Length: 268
Image (cartoon, rainbow, N blue to C red):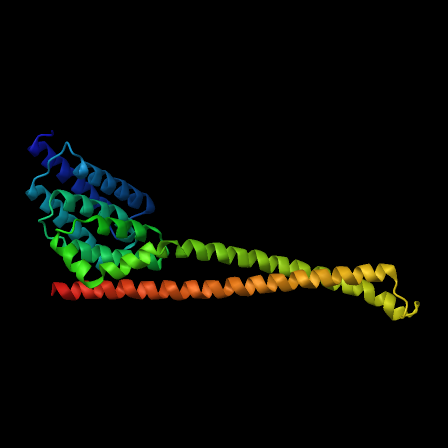
């Protein structure tokens, strides 16, 4: 088991490094480094071989809440949003070791960051939610969160709301493929129609006599038109499904916003 004084110094060093990384103007490399530092800090706190004092735990929580508090109000908060899952992991780890700490500010920040991630269609929002959900029910701030919104959000999550963005992307890709196929079919149909008209226009053949070659051409045109109609029907179905997904996404986003508002009101 590490010496408490040495562990305290190690935590100070990590917090200092995070303070350097977590800047509104931080580059992408800084964000990745900050995310790694946060996850490493969470692993350290979770370790069964490490006992972190309540004082050190509170210091870590207060410093991170200060950093992310600045980030939530900064004009450019990309690095704070991008590292929210790491922040949530540390908060969840601290809640397991020291459930008596005041996590109300940190949870409020994580709700805001989760909304930002959802609006950016970043699946990391789901990781933030899982960490929030893992906070023990004995934590007072978690009890407040559960009272105002936890059940509603959990129902959406268990219904698969986290898969909506991926499903919509797949549908949009399929719609694009169908549009290309429809264009190719339209060109082929036009070319085949043009190849039949000149022969008919010459009047060289008795129109009452079915020329075998033309019959095959017409039959193929009929098949192509059926294929085009099938593509149109599938496209319509996919577009309607995307519209429904968009409605679900907007509704869940509104639920998240309302959940955060209700949570903050219960803290007043």
